[in-house]
Amino acid sequence: MIVRILTNCQEGFHCTRMTPEELRNQELKIKELWESGEIPSLLHLCGGNEEWLCRYFKEHVGSSDWIFASHRCHFTYTLAGHTDLIDQVLMGRSMFLYGPRFVCSAIVGGVLSIACGKALGIQLRGGAEKVHCFCGDGATDQGAFWEAVRFAEARDL
Image 1 (cartoon, rainbow, N blue to C red):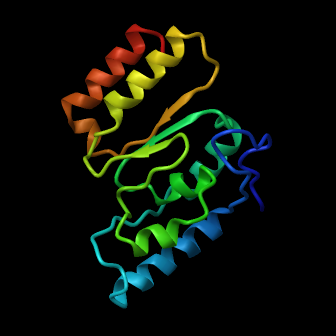
Image 2: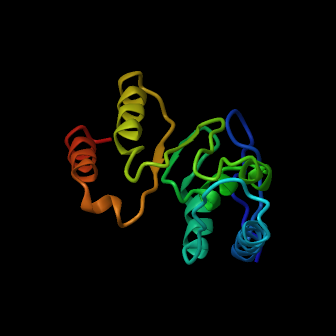
C-alpha cells in the first residue's frame, strides 16, 4: 500500500510517498549504520507507530501545517517530506532535525510550549495552517505537557 502524504505540494513540505514498510526499512538501515560505528552521536530509533503515523499524515497534515516532534523524530521528519534523514543522522543530527515547518527537540517535552506559541500566533493572525505536535509517553509525566494541554484547550488552539 502506498500512502500519499501530501496532495498539494506548496511552501513547506515536498510531496512524498512513504509506506510503513519503507519507514521501517529506513530505520533498520540507520540501526545498521549505528552498529557499524558510522554514526558519530547518540540516536533514538523509532518503531511501532508507523502505520498510525502514515495514516495520520495522509488524513490530517497539510502542506502549510507545522510539525513539532520529540527526540524520536525520524518518522515524522521523513513523513513531513524530508529526504535527507540518513545524511542528517550520519552528521550526528538524529535528535536535532529541522526543516521548513519542522521543529524537534532532544529535550523530552521540549517542543510542547513552542507548538502552543506557534498555534496561538497562527490563531491571532487568522491563519489557516495547523500545528501538529508529537510527543512520547515520557512527556505526559511532565508538568509541561499538562500546561500545554491546558493552554491549548483554554485558547481553543
